[in-house]
Image 1: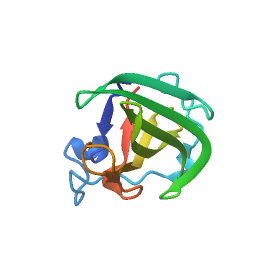
Image 2: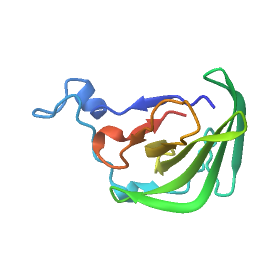
Image 3: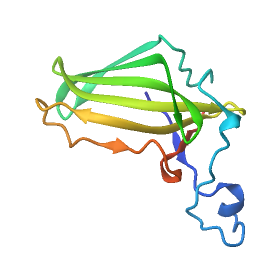
Image 4: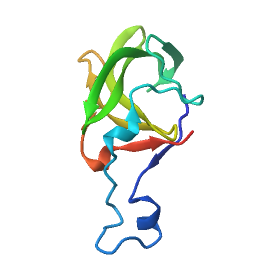
Length: 144
């Protein structure tokens, strides 16, 4: 699944020379009331109960990636996010378990609010990675 993700780095005014005293790498804090965990963007719909399965190769091994949009939500910095479970199977065995959090703003933009990944001991995949679910530098907006 190819999703173009743009880092929010300070908004349009900061990028254009910006507000005095505001650093170029300061990301604006989203207003929770401008978001919903209901992600219905036609380019990246995340309807609870939907399962996406992708097959391919990772690190030279046959892989199957199963994304499940759950009925669960989680608040990240007060923003309601839908919980997406991602399971990566390498040669038929579970290699990674990832939980991702997404939200949608009033304009229909899908935002990525972070993830938590656990690599199973049987795999030789890269080390366990985690994106903290809060903090301005972790939020990304998916450009659809």
